[in-house]
Image (tube, rainbow, N blue to C red):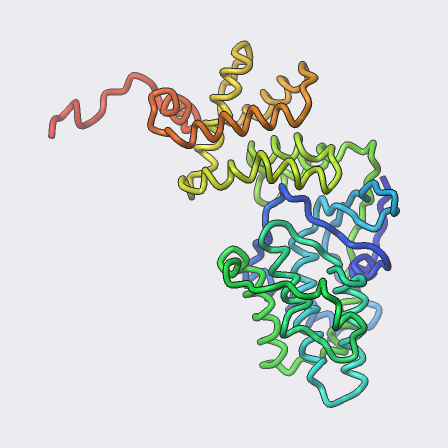
Length: 355
């Protein structure tokens, strides 16, 4: 493990390096309030001495094993901040690209080629629908084209976003927010970029023997807690490379997410109930006292087994899909009641008092 304090733009602008968000991580979800706070912090930095810096937190990544070398890195922690910074850079680039000043159009090209693109790829590859949305913002019809050597690249065509706009509302909305703020407040993007270069982060580069899953679990103590399904999914997928993660996720976990959408916003309750049902059937000797102990029970089970992760995913996926088809069955209700800690043996008010 290597840890250093570095400017975040130096990290994002590392030549021949693209960051990829593992498919099992949550999608981008920063709100307008959080984006406005970041912009306010940067604007405050613009007014301070040129040596002043602003600390943004930690970025944790794991270089991906590849014969081509560590071009790609899986971003373990820092997705929200790095994505928001990328959206601000896109808005700045597009604003500068329309300038009458040659030097500002040149700065737009510099932002494009250093922080947003790596050849014909985006520097930050998001997961699920957000990947297409960000690609559209970087390479789409409103993106900077003039004087860019990548302008004619075939991979720069992201296609229509009509079917993905709802899913990527935070992403698209926050880029539009930054563009609007730059125009309305007439922000000097040259000075803004200089301030962005003074944002710093602790950069942690993990090695293969650093147990990335333990990092995931430690992150459960801050921000929005990781759910049982988040932790279990990460455990089963994280040991694989990016492409294998995507394959396993698409085959076994994406159908689970789709099937449990019907239960939103209580989908976590139903998923935990389905997982409890699977574990009760697969390992009846493992007793779980309460919902918060469910993941530890899975770890106990996994420690005693040498099943291939794909076999476990296949079994879990099959059980969860069956659960989702009949959530009102007596067996399913039993596990749902366990998750919500519903006391047994209660007489309902309807039976007690009549109609």
